[in-house]
Image (cartoon, rainbow, N blue to C red; front, side, top):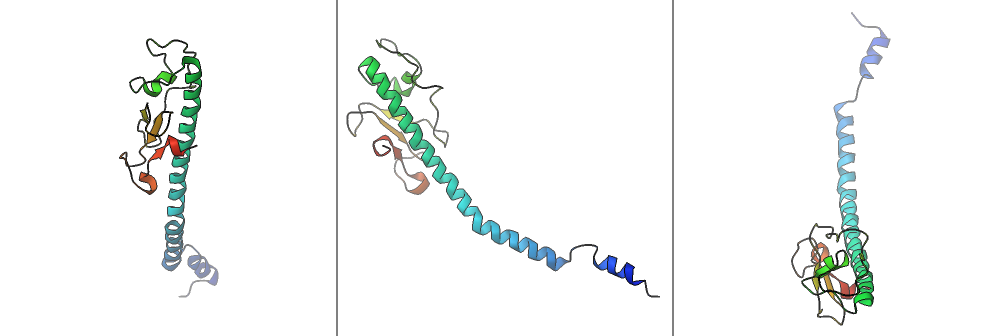
Amino acid sequence: MLRPISQRRRRSQAGLTLIEMLVVVTIIAVFAAVVGPKVLQRADVAKKTAVRQQINSFNTALGAYKLDTSLFPTNEQGLKALREKPEGVNGWQGPYLPQEVPTDPWNRAYVYKYPGEHGDEPDIISYGADGQPGGTDMNEDIVSWKSK
């Protein structure tokens, strides 16, 4: 016995076919393959930009520190001297940073060297994603003497 036309129509329109599902999944996979790397690349560029801005902020704070104390913090004092008065330093008017000294976007401490090897100012370095000197792309060092 044949079912009425309205029941047959409802059954054929009840859901998606396997082919329709495969087409949708394929479109999503292609979209993810094309767009995914672009999004990750943008995140990498944002991290490098954040490091450059932070190094510039350190340089500004170090300039104010030197104006007040007539010298830059030593290697032992490091960037911490921008938040807490080092022992035996006269003229300190800090804190020179609004919050604690941050880590870089890869959660590593910035390297501070004074006297620096690249001029009269301190060297400030982030070793990038790998945390090792040298490298390219995301592993490239971001340094104060090239951040200006």
